[in-house]
Amino acid sequence: MTPPPSSRGRWDVVVAGAGPAGLAVAAACAVRGLRVALVAPHLRPWHQTYCLWADELDAATTALAGPAGGPALGARYPATVVRTSTGQRDLGRGYARLHNDVVHGLLLDQFATGGGVTVPGTVTGVQDDGRQVTLADGTTLTAGLVVDARGGGPGSAQQRAWGERVTGDVGDLVPPGSALFMDWVTLREAAVPQPPVFLYGMALDDGTTLLEATSLAARPPVPLPHLRDRLHRLMAEAGLRTAEEPEKVAIPLDAAVRRGAGVPVGAAAGLVHPATGYSVATSLRTGAAVADAVLAGADADAVRALVRSARRRATLGLFALGREVLLGLDEEQTDTFFSTFFTLPPSAWNAYLDTGSSPADVAATMWRVARALPPAGRRSLATGVARAVRPRSRAVTA
Ligand SMILES: Cc1cc2nc3c(=O)[nH]c(=O)nc-3n(C[C@H](O)[C@H](O)[C@H](O)COP(=O)(O)OP(=O)(O)OC[C@H]3O[C@@H](n4cnc5c(N)ncnc54)[C@H](O)[C@@H]3O)c2cc1C
Image (tube, rainbow, N blue to C red):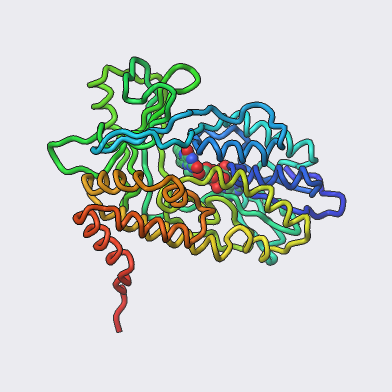
């Protein structure tokens, strides 16, 4: 389909991709009166279970719906529980699960009301110094700015999870009213060494409970059948039954930034947290900032620098170092690491979970964890840092 040309034959902004990052930018641009085309293969609501902190949901609600709010953009869990071999603790920071249909509907509505035009299709290239987009069907669109929200590449390290929506009495596996953020105890199986895997879970709106066996970060990624089998053994022991199709999670943690002529946002910009895999809260907040900059006349380089500022790149670099250290830890060391991590003051561990934190705050947290670890944990951390900063051996020699 050839879209109708904008009034001057050129779009202010063409957005490629309608995940959370692309749709947030497209809606924010349309709301501000910019002429926007959104190219996407389809506009179905996102199927992933997207979670974020409750305060991030508040910030997203204000950013998307204004201070008066609107329909609830997510379900809230007042308590967020972490379980390690040293015990169970409520982190004291509420958790939330996005209502994808509501958020998706709200953004699409804003987009359409602001005059945005959807172009069904697939982008195959961005040319002319980021001013022209080509689609698989041969259509070309000309724009002042092209935003690349096509998601990230596969990467070599991934977070993986196998999730089941279960029926039956979950007992204290997921304490009532809480989100189980990380449980490093329940899926441990004594017999053989296994990759570090934690249980993640929360009650869903339909009365079922989502349980996920999750590998936080692994290179190569942990095979999904391994995660499935560990979760299924737990379910069999607890008498839980599967209610629906499983959720299979694979989040690249070290995907390269898309370097084409467009301005990347979201996963395409490498803004998935390199150690935890989160990005949705950041993407929902970033739409407005990008749109404001475009409206103020910022060019592609200026918007790129806004999305991936030097400060943010430094922060991401520290998270990547943290990920490399985690990759080297076995189950017991990982359990020790998180037992220690969550005894830090909330401001310290929160800094480590947010890609918007300053590099100084993140470095301070890393230093505090290192100091708080028992001697054996500190040794594994030091080994991990040494491995992470060691230059990779070269494939070609003189
Ligand atoms: C199962 C799962 C669960 C996750 N859970 C969480 C979570 O709880 N919290 C969190 O913060 N993060 C989570 N993540 C990680 C991350 O935040 C998501 O991957 C998020 O979807 C990234 O958003 P995005 O908009 O940048 O990219 P994507 O969501 O990947 O969107 C890219 C879009 O671009 C489209 N596209 C691709 N190629 C083209 C093309 N050539 N032309 C046009 N369109 C194209 C795709 O169809 C897609 O719709 C999860 C990831 C997965 C896979």
